[in-house]
Image 1 (cartoon, rainbow, N blue to C red):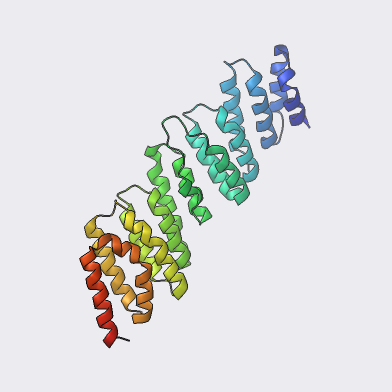
Image 2: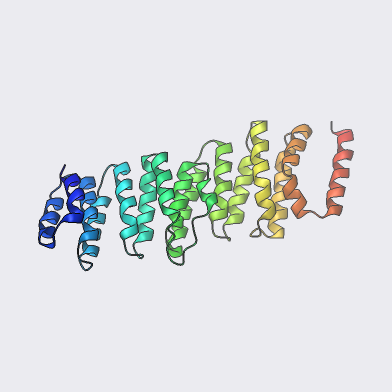
Length: 282
């Protein structure tokens, strides 16, 4: 009740009542309601006092135990904070939203997306489309931080992706994560994603995993020609162990990748080799 009263009265209070209003807000026992009340009062105070009250509201919001309420408070506060503090607060917001629920995370992403910081690139749409929600949350958290702080958080995202037990889901998470990592780390992550996809036992899921990886491998300029060829030979050796019919289906799924790393002459030779081998390897 006190929070709502202060929110309603804030625009209409005369200056001589501001100290009393702040005192009333500070004795609210609920951290969420106290943060909301302080945030409502701050924009109506003299400009010299506003940063202190916003900082106080932020400290209270960070102490909120309920992650959904914390996400709501941080989402409301973030646009009013100094630019130097916004990356950290945005990261906290995304982390709290991910723990709360998917709807709250979506609201947080919608709130943050139109407001990149000065000199910051907007969050890539692809990051919003990462299928695994835990990996997505950590990636988005990293993208809200200054570049110097991102590597440690991306390493955390890699660890989260690698811990997924289902091989098909793990391959998908690694595939989605790779483009957001530093270029020097992408070959390693793509190699692990490819090896994981090859290990998927279900035939249809394996083909799907390989087919979704192939275009990314084909157009990734961060993987050198030597690395591409090594990956290709390792993959073919692994898939061939499953027998010719399954091997050919898996090979067809990788066609975009093969077309990118082989010359037309080499592609023709591969087609002839497949035909010839088929005569003695039914």
